[in-house]
Amino acid sequence: MEFSHVSVLADEVIENLNIKPDGIYVDLTLGKGGHSKRILQKLSSKGKLIGLDQDAEAIKASKENLKDFSNVLYFQSNFENIDEVLQSIAIEKVDGFLMDIGVSSYQIDNAERGFSYMHDGPLDMRMDTSNELTAEKIINEYSQDELSEIFSKYGEERFSKTIARNIVEYRKKQRIDTTFKLRDIINHSVKSKEAHPEKRVFQALRIKVNRELDVLENTIEKAVDQLNVDGRLCIITFHSLEDRIVKNKFKDLEKDCICPPDFPVCVCGKVSKIKIITNKPIVASKKEQKENSRSKSAKLRVCQRI
Image (cartoon, rainbow, N blue to C red):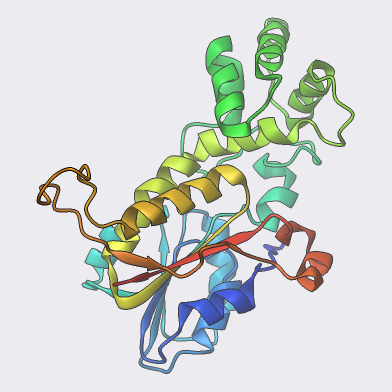
């Protein structure tokens, strides 16, 4: 299956990265390299792009897509390892970072990856297929309370307890090892007329399997610390849990002293690291939303190193 993915908010990302022709830029979520190609087209031969993706298929696809460019370095790695990656190539500071937190079209549409409730396949959901934890393992081995907490915390699912209880009852008879088995259990558990009530549970499992929220929160300040002055960090998110983390982390990094107001002098030593460029997130145009339905929930937030 061809690795396909349409880059969302591509024009907005390029505009907000403020690309310097001789600069160093890092695409932390390389995918097929759609955003990276746009960055590379703005770079001179002295400029450099570093691309990371934990999915081996994405690395392979991006190398093909970017084969006309010689100033690219590829790393199959989770973006939370960006400090180690940069250290390994003796780079201390860069001029811009991009994080596109969405799941690629290839991952969703490839039934074998187990991300989608629209295709029957193994209950996997790993972005890095070398990881041991799968959605199948969680569904079949975690306790009812653990499942309910995952669905509620990462999927904001109102019927988390009912779904978890029915999963535990079903697996007493047989293992839940496919996406359609899980989808059917969810549909029988949820009293709702919405088109796809299973989407929240699938989202929750994907986040848990790949530690998505923890990795995002851990990486934002790492990236900021490795930016040159005036360098920018652009982050695209696709649901409220991710966007909230980015919004709050940016606010925290923009704050100076956090001592109580009645303290005569600062004792915390905290200094502002960034200026927030987007007080409100940038969203896709109506034209883009019409052409690419997956852009409808996309939000871009940008900060600049000071």
